Amino acid sequence: MLTQISIEITMKISQLHFLYLVVFLSFSCKDHTANTIEASNTLNSTKLIGEVFGTSYSIIYDSDTDFQKAIDSVFKRINHSMSTYQVDSDISRINRNEDVAVDQNFKRVFEASKVIYKETNGAFDPTIGAVVNAWDFGPEGRIVSLDSTKIDSLMSDVGFNKISINNDFVKKNKGTFIDFNAIAKGYGVDAVGEFLESQNIDNYLVEIGGEIRVKGRNIEKDAEWKVGIEEPHFDGERSIFKTLELIDESMATSGVYRKFKVDEDGNRYSHIIDTETGYPSKSNILSISVIAKTCMYADGYATAFKSMGIAKVEEFLKNHPELKVYIIYDDGNGKFATLSLNGFPNQ
Image (cartoon, rainbow, N blue to C red; front, top):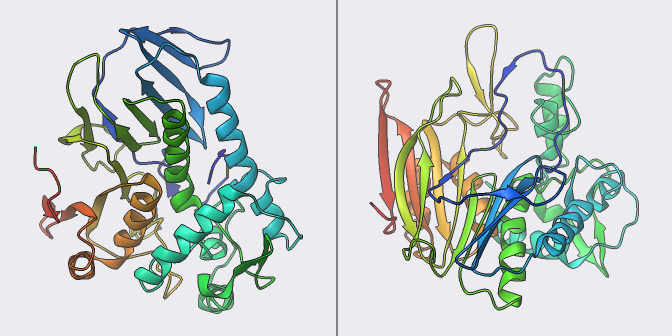
């Protein structure tokens, strides 16, 4: 989920594990610390750049106050709570069936996950982690000679409705593996945004690995925050497919073109695992972007919608006007087609 590790695999996998959105901003940066973090101060704006959760981040806010140490502390707490790549994190210990009192970060992500799980009838399910690992898309490595019997065995412990939190302790089956990878990055974006708001910052943009939350305006350009959605490319090429403005909203995108595998017969397998079957999701959706009030919910729903398919997403959104969705999909003839739902911006 968070800090990445190197895993040897037997099938081709894309080297980039996150879908990136491009933020159109221009700042002259200077070194901020001895590590890879940079900062710039222009017209009372500060930009912080670094790496976290196995990807990069950019934070821009309308103050010359340096919040780097405080933001690093936010990241550290989230990692310690929910990183499945850190052996001593709370979630790793819980997955080893140790008794651990969880913090508020864990509880907030847990409760949001429960809501999305129920609303999507299980299409979003953080307990699919063991199956994700088995397919070699997670932190623990693949299962050798994976077959239907092993998948059925792993699926017996899947189901977010089977776990609970009682008096700060998680209750689950011994074989259940919890992985908040599909929602924790969005939560990290929200956590930084909430910190900045606690410091009376009225204008900011927080982006982690392409997941974005904005408030106010880009004061340097005296304009709304403008971002872009990347065009799907399986060969690693990067280009912008669509640009749009965000106003006091969050956006997250889920796609398959940067994280997939190809078997010996040339079949491409998505990293999105179908929570009903335990097999990689089969869908013509290449990329799906969700705009919501919080990045945590945008992140979780984007993952769920990717596995649900277009028809189910359209039906779902009839009862969820608060979510705006943009889909890029394969039209069956090797060309891109798009679909904007619930008023997704069409700039």
